Length: 116
Image 1 (tube, rainbow, N blue to C red):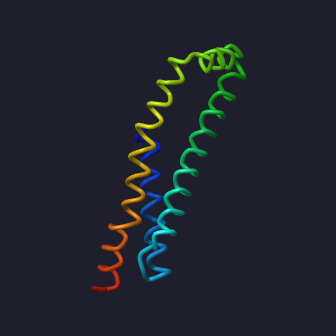
Image 2 (cartoon, rainbow, N blue to C red):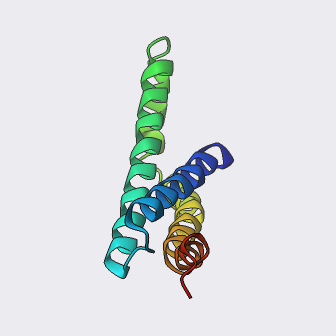
């Protein structure tokens, strides 16, 4: 989790700084929602590509790996554990991003541009 969360948080901070410097204001509510949804979709797309690439890479030498993975996907217990793990990472990252592009962005804009 930490190997994927740290680049996510770094990118989130970098994009906010670029936005603040360019726009000289904090994001509006619709912009905040777009940023949050965009980061979430990019993050999970990146992770899905990693899973598929890993399956492809390792199943080239051993086709049984892909077959086992497909069998696991048919097991409700495996799927429920995967959904729980996904939500344990997705919900906090979504909330952190939403907060960061809201109140925290406003504080940063106020400090950077001396707005009261």
